[in-house]
Length: 167
Ligand SMILES: Cc1cc2nc3c(=O)[nH]c(=O)nc-3n(C[C@H](O)[C@H](O)[C@H](O)COP(=O)(O)O)c2cc1C
Image (cartoon, rainbow, N blue to C red; front, side, top):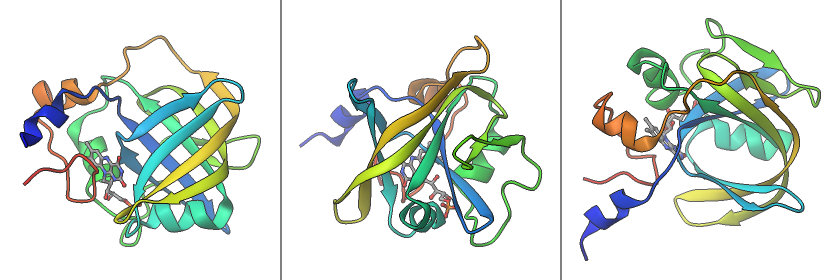
């Protein structure tokens, strides 16, 4: 089996955020897809060791910020290689609190939506959280960041907790 075939799958780049009590956290994910239109359902794949996993299970809501090509490696590194278990990622990042009172990263973001958790599928290392979009907004018309651009132009890597990680 040629694992490189998996790299031909196209993705965007997102920050998934959630909260527990009054604490906020978010992480980079490329594993985000819309799976139905009526109702608008989205699936996100989140590693069980991530703090964001715990927060989504706790609040039963998550937001998805669609990143722009302006996101640099420092910004992506904070959300994609560091854990909220060790740092407060929201302390120096632009964000809003949505109508549903869910944190949403707005920095380097072209649009966002907020989902209410409707189902969780255990897929081993990760959970697939399925959420129904209850809020959505376009912030600007900048170019959304793709996973391909992240790898080929920004020369980014993926950590072990990413579903697309390859040794
Ligand atoms: C390019 C990229 C893609 C990633 N995709 C995912 C993903 O789809 N799902 C996931 O659980 N983690 C993914 N990660 C890893 C998490 O962002 C990372 O483990 C993060 O530090 C978790 O933070 P937390 O513990 O604060 O929740 C990705 C990281 C990068 C850099």
